[in-house]
Amino acid sequence: MWHMDSYDKLKPYGIAINGCIDGFSRYIMWMEAYTTNSDPKVIADYYISTVTRIGGCPKRMRDNRGTKNGHVREMQLFLHRNQTDHHAGEGSFIYGCSTANQRIESWWGVLHKQSVQFWMDTFKTLKDDGYFTGDFLDKNLVQFCFLNLLQEELDEVVRTWNTQIRSRPPWVAGGRPILMFSMPQLYGAAEDRLQCILPEEVAVCKEECTPKGQYPCDETVFELCVLLMGVNGWSSPGCI
Image 1 (spheres, rainbow, N blue to C red):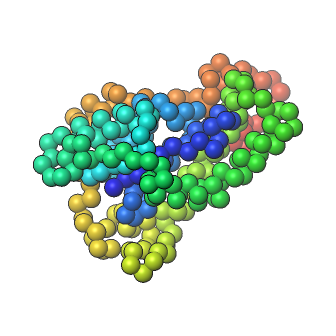
Image 2 (image 1 turned 135 degrees about the vertical axis):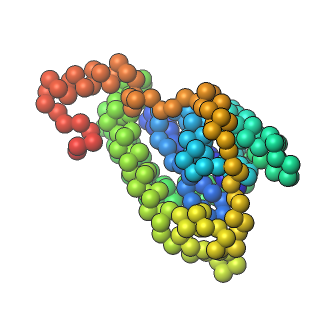
């Protein structure tokens, strides 16, 4: 089962995170930072891009009830519409409260320590020093300067997490998440953890998705920032 959720600690500063973790292996399926985590079509693109990349969809998914996951739910049900087991149709997607979605909730604690606390402190300093008021322009400037940097850091945290051995209680299988996800049979799990999908099914789902935009912030703000950087000879935020 995959566990999906959004993380809002940086949302007051214009950066929203959405992620998904495989419940058995603790392998991170996706971890995305963007200007929103409440647009269901953007979240759906994370889902269908991951499904396409690994060549299958999960037998079941779990998320907290909300409008942001409606498209993912419909796609999950669509991809399972022809199945006959107890995970078919409605059984392939589970709604629950956040406190019961422990796999992803637990990982948010790891992310907070490894990455997010630093950014929270950085943005709070900007606010305390009078450089951030929370208005449209300030949020877009934060996105312009830091969104891509934060995504790069998330990618690194995920790579480290997925490839390091995870210790667990003796009665729970432990190992490297990437190996446990790729070869679950070696750890006592069913090998057919994914549901096969057809290219035409993916194409139908893709029509209902909205990929991340090419700009980290509002397009006009982006162009103005690039213009100011060129005039003043400033380096891009990624080169700092």
